[in-house]
Image 1 (cartoon, one colour):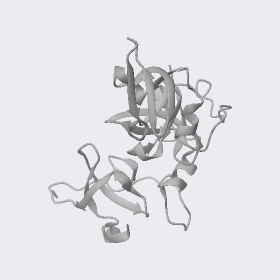
Image 2: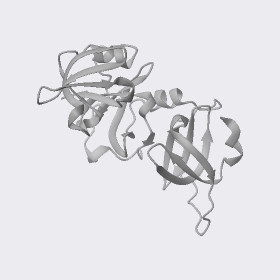
Image 3: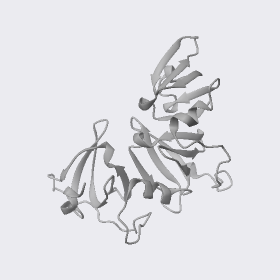
Image 4: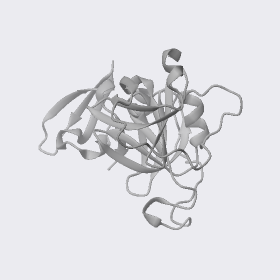
Amino acid sequence: MNSFKHLIDEDVDVEISGKTYFSGILIDNGLDILVLYNEQKYMYIPLLHIHNIKKRSNLEYSLEKPSAEMPFQMEQESISYRKILMNAKGQFIELCVTGNRSIHGYITNVLNDYVLFYSPVFKNVFISLQHIKWLLPYNTNLTPYTLSNADLPVVPSNIPLSRTFEEQLKKYTGQLLVFDLGDNPNKIGLVKSISNNIVELVDAEGQLIYWKLSHLKSVHLS
């Protein structure tokens, strides 16, 4: 999607999924991701969630130009969603995955269609790649919640991992899982089965609920 290459270094307005809007300076774009400099932060936004982008019309004030080097430098390579995720491994970032709720921590593994993310609040979280709306690298001097490095050990998880989101979740059949950070009580329950993109879940009251897996964004153990 190089059709807006001419907007590089321009002030732009961007609309993404969930009727969310950002203004910033377009720094770079690849076939499936763009980089926006917004309020002294670099935002990496998968094009999957871009609804439209246009040159900013409100020029009553100028946006601040980048003052720091862009994280995840690709050296002469074009950027891509997967390359960014791989380069982000082990670095503190903010991910938006559910509505406008963000999760803070770091990526430990990148698989075919999901990542394993470590959060000091939710611990190990499996996040579908198609539902990451954006990621923001932390300032190098900051840690989530100002926790010490001892509380945030950047080490690979020893969880056995499958290549796909669905196959990974099948390992937790019979266990209590929390989907989408618990934003809905109907997304917390005991997994009865997972097959053909359908999750059969038993809620707290014993009611069976069937969820389409492709619409579930993240999952972690309760």
